[in-house]
Length: 138
Length: 143
Image (tube, rainbow over all chains, first blue to last red; front, side, top):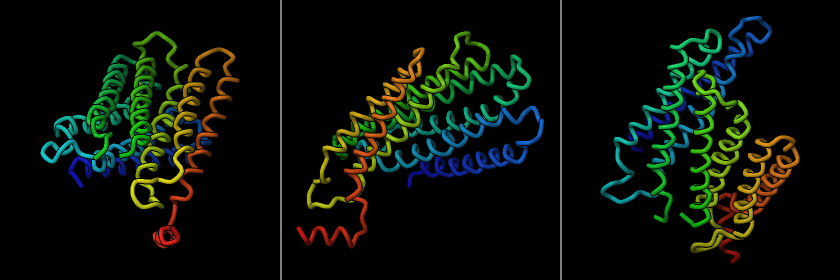
């Protein structure tokens, strides 16, 4: 199993645990009047769907799809690392900033959300570029 | 990787990009720097990523990876799987279009019916391939 796949799958498991922790917190506090309760839903959804499901898919696809060649294996390693960093950093920034900005809008929170949006999109573009050429006959 | 799997997976990658673009636009709207009502993109964002990316990727990989009953390259009756590809993509486009227009509920409903038919068609193809090794060996011996 290549090292990037190991990073992606382990990080996906961490995101799954965090998603369930957020969901549990939300359920436990459902009957309270805490103002931040309604801000947890997008956090849970994106930790689950992007952090766990999509990141797990990225890791297994990077490992399993037919390789370009014996020499270049799975594509430029730096592109894979950049994809991993962009995905997880973008998600982390979103998890922190989205609830905070929803409760207390401001330029700092706005800037972090913009960076998060760009990083997550960049991660997806990099994955598509890495894997497109490997969708082929072996 | 068989041709139908390549079609499924490349379509899934395109929907992943479209879903990510719509999601990023919505996050830019939440940040306050975008003035267009990107919140209306939510149903399209969900459709692109759930039906377009996850379901279609699963179909493509399943068509590739599930055990084959016949010797050689055969994956059994492929027509339902090809039908599933056409119907699921037609359904996704219909649901996305119906979500974007006023009074589009009828179009969304038609899209959902297409997607449901696609899933049934794929299951018709895949069901015999979901088998234990013993069963696969029995089938091959019978042939």
